[in-house]
Length: 266
Image 1: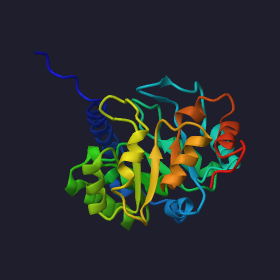
Image 2: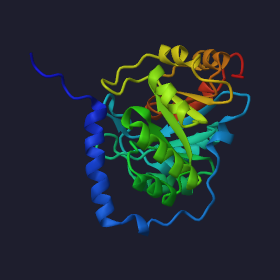
Image 3: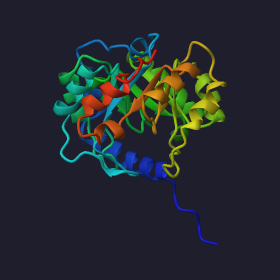
Image 4: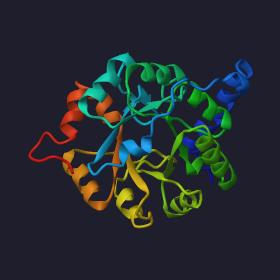
């Protein structure tokens, strides 16, 4: 019997380890000065009564390939802010998603919203990079971390003033996120082993997350009716990237998603 192919996540994590080593050799952690501005609170931005959208800037993905050829942060991020995004996610992973820390810096200069560094964070070096580049929050993927590393990274991010969006995919990962007192939990509807999507994952895991924890549904989000369904179920926000980046007019697509049909999303 042939061996099972490696998961997409495992491949990306190996690449990430190599990239961190290269960047650390070029610029040690002691040289990473925090950005001068105080971090904005992602948690506060998502805590209102209405459904919030974290609008994502990304150029490509392993599942979709190139999403928006030649896209720039300066073109897209201000449009997201004007259309009503509550926060901005910037994908900074390079080899598979075409991102960089330069995109994060450009987003900090282009908008006043909280910025989430979305990457495969496995090392404290990446937290200091994020803070130096102007991030307000970082993504921590439970599937990429053991319990010790998850707790350490969550604690150090908090010490740096960064919020953490802790991403889960199943009930065991929800329990592991709650064990480190996660205040923001992202339910990724995409399976990082094969990149398949099932939006029912959000509904299946909501019952395991206590009141007071802000829940963000990620990946595979449809139109305004789906956002209303999530809001009714107790989801506070959604993170949307590919469908907005691939739209002819990302700002108009976001405005429509936020309720320009028959009734607002509340």
